[in-house]
Amino acid sequence: MDLVVCTDIVKRYRQGRLQVTALNGVSLAIERGAFIALAGPSGSGKTTLLNIIGGLDSADEGSVRVEGRELAHLTPAQLAEMRLRKVGFVFQAYNLIPVLSALENVEFVMLLQGVPAAERRDRARAILAEVGLGEMCDRRPAELSGGQQQRVAVARAIVAAPTIVLADEPTANLDSKAGKGLLSLMEEMNARKNVTFVFSTHDRMVMDFARRLVLLHDGRVAEDRVK
Image (cartoon, rainbow, N blue to C red; front, side, top):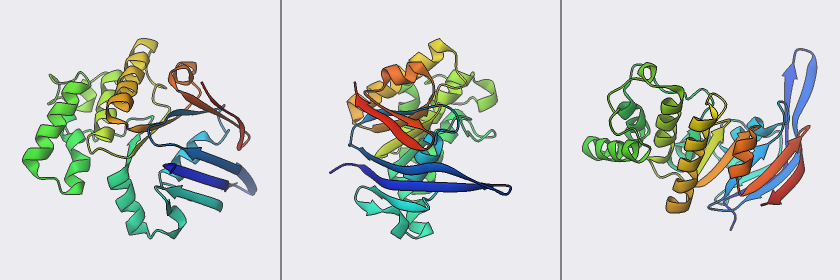
């Protein structure tokens, strides 16, 4: 069974008096363990599709199933629980909590999950060591470089063992060296832990790393190929 199945997704937004169609009949199946990039220019619908898959937004028409569950049929509480237990998010702006240390930021999702303090502290330290930040656990986001902050965001996304990680433009604020290091890290996590990664991007390097590339144009799938 595919992990995610999107069928005929339509999403519209209002911009003043205008109605903009962000997604116009998108159908897409994502297998478990995928390493896939949703690519296209700004306005192509890639971030909108990512948000709908993650339950942060809802489709106006069509069906989205994650692990066989139709998202439109879930209550807000059930959607929140799905995001907490099943989905890891890596945002373009990192979305780290400024007053918390790197360790505390990574612990935060597990805190919401009710993981005991000693266990979540051990798991957070271990994952920060895996991403090369074992010596920076006590630093706050402002004391870290952009690449380091993004690594903390990746650690936070994967520490709770989600089924799928959704990464929105993960290399947008990084130089090429930091971006390549981050992608190599996520590729290793995908291979070693079988975590499914879905990226939205217009970065050629991300497209080169991905094993499957879905090109979106004007809210439609223009190309879908396995490399």
